[in-house]
Length: 218
Image (cartoon, rainbow, N blue to C red; front, side, top):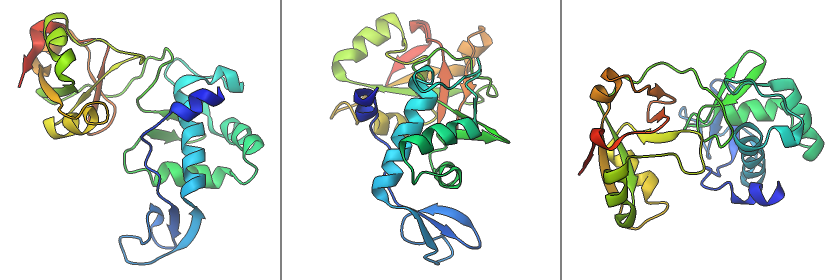
């Protein structure tokens, strides 16, 4: 499990501060200009971020966390497990991390929490249906032809992750390749044909797989 934590990458590592008026925020100053007080420095933000990502997306069972079919975990139990590992990590700090996350990786509902995307475990998320007529997927030059021929299938993840814009798809793919190839997905036609697509965030749409007939290389 420790090795997996080390491989959970690409998290936004920025200190978290709290404004008395607007609550938790990332960086040096709130949008109102106030510095607020420090909640978590960069290193502690990274540690909690990696831990929560692993707990909610990849190995809840290893931590003794019961996870529902829709990805929900008890917030208080998660806080207790986290606090056992990092004595300075409190429930309040965990909530500050979630509320200040600009990418919207996690969702809080009362006393339960879940990851909105990025799962490798088997979950059935229940977000609203996608409304974007076109979606995008970034990949490498080497993989593009294979995808156009065979479709998009999940790799090491429960769902295929599609982007709401070509720019976002390029940004995501740039993590793995210097020259991303963007594939356009005819989401409107795919959904009319019965392919479910759900809106995890404003930028990310999830689906089980995308057959090749809905793909076009840009």
